[in-house]
Image: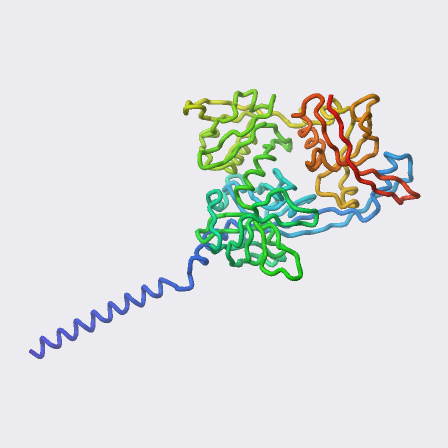
Length: 462
């Protein structure tokens, strides 16, 4: 009896020891600190990058050469520059190294460098929208090198009050995480130059500081819902940060999308809307490569080559990848009742179509881009604006009052980025259509002192 009791006690002791050890191991393996916030950050931290830029800023008065060219001879002097540096953040969206960030992070940059983990890369700007403050960059990596891409949340899949996480590189100090809630999905923040183009920005009380710009705003599933862009600057405001919804980022890229090959922007001529029903062709530019290839408004793109892009950004990346190898982009589209078509789009350099000759043909004036040093001096937005270098006699431009030396700031309320942008705006206009130019006149008072007067001039196209 005693032996049997001893055996039972011994078995109980072994059971307690084993069971206790199992419970201890289970507790050790489940660290209570690894809550959903920590797990979400672990999913995406390899997709966040630091961005540093170098810009050459003029330190002498740039008006001397400018007015010598357009208002008569003057004594020329050499221009000196100094280096200006800035920092920001970005999000890897494709394993080949495509990155989303804010335009203001990289605007006017002469050099862009990306830090991924501990590795430093050069990068180039692929496309940008100053109005929506979105930029698409590409890492110049080794052949075959792959990166960790962040997963996108579905369009408009956000909940008021849900937990969100802001990731970035505040003040250039390195990777940083802040947590908050989604306060609003319908904000239109003001910037130094007025409200930006979209009114449905995301608002959060997660801390967004300088350097967070271009970083990620994610949900607790670790999916990208927006790009950090700004914090409300008011002495009485606290915890009011903004992000561009990922849906608006895709729409902005659709508007500015132009593949690049050998440093030449290529013309595609299609606007794509990404929605739950696929990649819908929303608009075709007349005479464009897409138009000539047979794409129709209402078509749905289901494949680019052998790949089936799930959203517009993936579509952009696939077209970019194809265009870097050849100018032809093979598409598979569905139309009407679902009939499938194979369409081959042959891209052409944009500058062969959208150039100063097109502008002169439309209005009878010759435009010239404003130099970077003059932009810096006048505090103009990046790549925005040009000057009237000449006006044809009896042309629509002359009859409307455009004069040599005027600065063009906008066309039909659209920022005048460069000659290519201006030609694009005029391309779809018809004869006798009216176009409004926002202009600045510089009147020389005495010496190098000039008076600036702003106004608008309406020109009828021919």
